[in-house]
Image 1 (cartoon, rainbow, N blue to C red):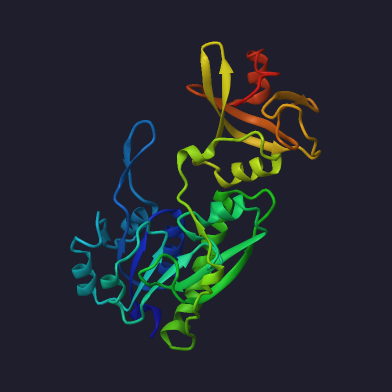
Image 2 (cartoon, rainbow, N blue to C red):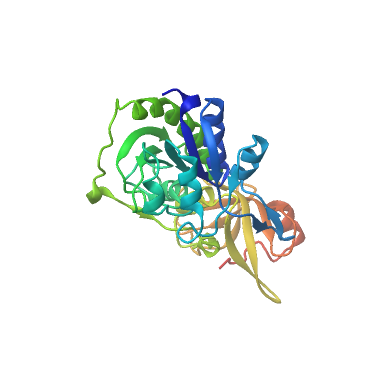
Length: 318
């Protein structure tokens, strides 16, 4: 069966999913429809924003479906009428019910951004960076009713650079995911490969990231805080609180660096001068502040902020 004859219903939402979808389109697969999460309010203006997958689908004139609930809505009937050969899922955001998974004759394949069974769940890229992993990867998995526990069809290992953040690593994984998917689909559809069961004893789960997860514990070593910044880059970001005359204010650390020396500081959280830079002592080592953002203010260089706020130097962040 060639790509043009292979009817695929695609499920996906963010940019990661859109990259996978783009690769399928470029490889001439017949995309019958795209299912994605409904438009959401975004930013201070609360403007409605389309998902990256929806934007791409509309550009390519592919029908888009945005069901609130896959169990109770018309989704199952709509997909059945399309008679897809395959369902492809990439960061859709919800677990597909059994009734939908059973529709295509070649099953439903999920592109997951980890080396399963490690880091099952919604935030595998963040979790890999937080944990200090040197490698992660892409897994193609035959979906079942449980989360990320189906048979493994193919995997590819990807290295994690020392300064890599969630944004850059996700982009790298998306490119690798699209490539391995289009290389594997003909083999899967042709019956040349079979799935392999995951080892449940090695299964590890990651949690959904929440805004408050970005709070810094200055007793942690500098390396751990730096990993947290890399993992939570863009969202939710990492933050602390700066004591001021009128109370504590949230201080977001937008850009930071890691000091080479691993010196145990006397007071974790204390803002100090470090080789002409503004830095913060941690439980072990220093975090160098490059760009910061005080609650209600614009992003600024840490050195400029210190010049304009004399009490900042030697203050203790909490």
